[in-house]
Amino acid sequence: SQQGEEDPQALSIQEGENATMNCSYKTSINNLQWYRQNSGRGLVHLILIRSNEREKHSGRLRVTLDTSKKSSSLLITASRAADTASYFCATDSWGKLQFGAGTQVVVTP
Amino acid sequence: DAGVIQSPRHEVTEMGQEVTLRCKPISGHNSLFWYRQTMMRGLELLIYFNNNVPIDDSGMPEDRFSAKMPNASFSTLKIQPSEPRDSAVYFCASSLNSGATYNEQFFGPGTRLTVL
Image 1 (cartoon, rainbow over the protein chains, first blue to last red):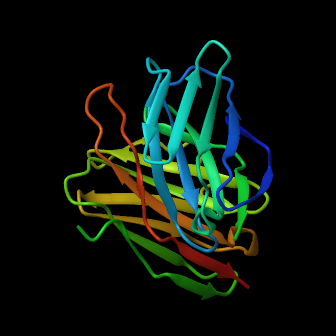
Image 2: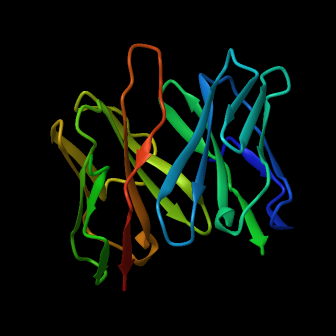
C-alpha cells in the first residue's frame, strides 16, 4: 500500500518556471525523502528531510515538511528541460520506505 | 564507487521457470532493500535486510518469492515458479543506517522481468 500521495499527478511547465508538487501521508515518520526517476531508469535520491526539520534546500530544490499536517512539498526553481521526470515522495518509518504514486513533470523548452 | 549493481538488466522467461535476480550493494552500506515497480501498484517494498539479516519481509507477495543475503556484498531475489503477473521492474537499494538514524537509499538500475 502507498503511504504518500503526490499532488498533482502530472505537471507541464515551460523552462524557467517553478514546479511545485505536494505529498501527503498518514502515519508518523522518521524522515521524508524525494526521489526522481527518468523514464526507464532507476530512482535518484534528491533530498531527505528529517521529522524535526521544517525546510531544506539543495541547489534549485526546496523541500518543506509540516508534520502536524502530515504533508511535504518539493519546489524546483528555474526548471530546465532536463528536469523532465517523475518525482516521488517516500516516507521512512524505521528504515522502511513507502512511496507515493509520483508526479510526472514535463518541462518544455 | 560503482553504485548499486544489479544483474541481469533484462530477463525474459516462461511461466513456471525459476528466476534469480542479483544485487551488489554499495560497499560499506549495512541495509539492503528489494522493491518491485509496476504501473498498477507503483513501487512496493518487498523485503529489507539489516546487517545481512532479514528484518521485514511482509511485502513479499507469496511463498514463490524468497530472498537471501549470504554476505554484506551480495543478495539474491528468487521467484520459483514464476508467473506472468510477476512481470515488473525489480530494484535493489542500499543505505547506511545507524541506530535510529535512517538515511537516503541508493537504487540500482533495476532488472526488467518479463514472464511469458
